[in-house]
Amino acid sequence: MSTLKEIANECGFSVATISRVLNRDETLNVPQSTREIIFDTAEKLNYKTKFERKQGNLPVDELLDVNRPVLSAKRIGIIEMHSTTELLDDTYYLYLKSNVERVCLEKGIETTMLQFDSEEECYRMVGNSIDGIIAIGPFSRRRVEAMERLTSRIVFLDSAPDAIKYCSVQPNYETGVVQGIDYLLEMGHKKIAFVGPVETRNSKGDKAPEMRRRIFKDMAKIHKDDMEPVYIETDSTGSNAIEKIAEFISDCDKKERPSAYFAFNETTAINVMRGLQSAGLSIPDDASVLGFNDTIIATYTQPQLSGIHIYIDEMAKVAVNTMTQLFFDENMLPIRVLVPTGLSKRDSVKKI
Figure 1 (spheres, helix red, strand yellow):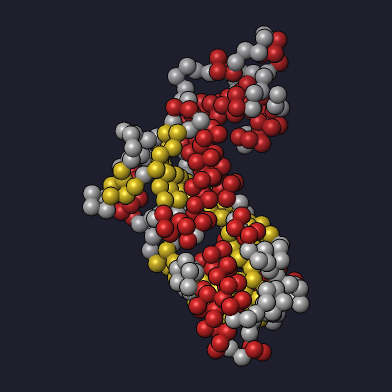
Figure 2 (figure 1 turned 180 degrees about the vertical axis):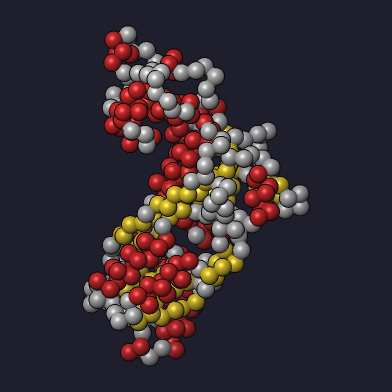
C-alpha cells in the first residue's frame, strides 16, 4: 500500500493538499480537476485513508463523482512525422512512439495511429473518434490545422510549434551539447568535429539551422582558448556520414585530423564509426566518437558507443500525463517541459 509522499511524487501536488483531498476536506478550495487527478493517482497506487482502512477497504472510486472521466474510456491518436522507412533510419522516433504506447497501455488508455491524407488534407483513423492527440516530431502548419479539426487536446512530443497554444515535451538539447563538449574537453580532446546537417526541420516543419550544431558553435566560442571546432556536413538524417567521413579523412592531413567526433544523432555517430574504421582508423585509439540520443543500439556497436542520453521513457510519461491533465481540464494553460539529458560513458571515447 502506498504513502502520501508516493502519491505526491506521482502527481506533483503537496502532501498536505493530497491528504485534505483524500479525507474529503470540503473547506479546501482546489479545482475539481485537481481532486480527480489526486483520486486517480491514489487509486492507481492502491492508497487507502485511515477511514477506508477502518471501514473495510472502501474503494477509492466510491469517493468520486460518478460522472467524472475514466481514463480507461479514453482514446488517444498518435501521429508521427516520419514514414516507416524514416523511422528505421532514425530509431529515436520509433522508441518515442513505442514508449508512448507502453505508458498508455499501463494507464488503460487506448491508442490508435493516424495517417495523413495529403489529397483531403486530413488525418485518417480506424474508429469514429479520439479524445486527444500526441504528435511526435515537427509538423507543418497545415498538418497541425488538420489535427485541430479532430480535437483541441494536442500534446507535441519532441517539438513545440506554438508554446502559447499547445503543450509540448522536448529534450533539453542545450544541456546535452554542453555535457558532450565538457566531457570531451575533460578527456583531453581539443580539436573536436561536429558531424551533422547545417539545417533540419524546426518545430513548425520549416527548414532552420540545426539546433545542436548552433549550440555547438556557441559553445566553441565560449571555449575558444581550449577548443578547436571542425564541421563535417551530412544530410538531414546523417545517413551519408560514412561517405562524408571517408572524404574528410582522405582530404585531411593526418596531423590536422580531429581527435574526437561529436555526432548530432545516433545514426550519424554509428556511420561516423564505420567511416573511420573503413579508412583504417581504430576507435577510440585513433579517434573518439560521441553520439546523441543513446538508445539500446549504442550498446551493440564495436566498440560500444558513448552518447548523450535522452530519457525517452520519461518524455513519454510526461506527454501522457500532460494529456491526462487535459482530459480533466481542457482549459489548462499550455505547458512546455524540457527533459534534461544524461551522459553514457562507454568505450568509444578515450582520454588523451
